[in-house]
Length: 238
Ligand code: ADP
Ligand code: MG
Image (cartoon, rainbow, N blue to C red):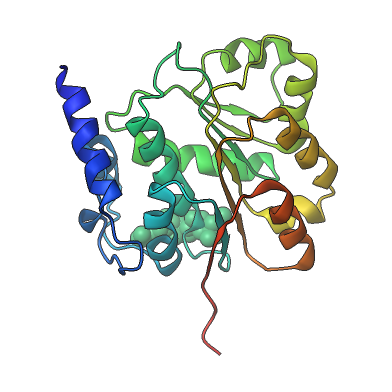
């Protein structure tokens, strides 16, 4: 067997044994791949924020997550680390693996920010093909890039355009969906787009929904897109 296979097997065993009720303070205490560890180290991330501590161990084990924590609490890594790790352990890497994860966020600016964090943390040895689909390029250019991506960070309207118009855009291998800033997605009127996107995706998948506020509309969206989610929230001290 290849060395990679052995590493992935060991990592999977460690994830299986992970105690999701424990409070993890340091990224070193979590079973993470070498490239992710190297990325966290070079970005100087060492201790987990509260939402990361609550969400990451559950998400590594494949749970659907409904997460709420105010802006600035570190939600990006709370979903990016599980995306990188779960795809890595599934070896969903390279042009033949197909699109493994879709991260939807309401604005182009937020998509670019997420992409930058992914580059910072995932760019130290991970071999995923990741890309942005946020408009601004021709549909055709985005289309070509999409056929090679393992991870896409996108805005709802644009990715829906590809799903509905690009016959070659195959999402059969998609195993993870992230809805970031779900409250803003809804505020901006993207509810129907998100519903339509979810209809295109495999039902057998892991979904993580994060928002800064918990509203009825967010929980309605969660009911439609998540499967028996774990609720993780961090409240501000009064
Ligand atoms: P949110 O999405 O909840 O608004 P972000 O993910 O954008 O929050 O993170 C907010 C800030 O906190 C960013 O500058 C990020 O680099 C920093 N940050 C996130 N996680 C950590 C961590 N574990 N240790 C130190 N800084 C962190
Ligand atoms: Mg955020």
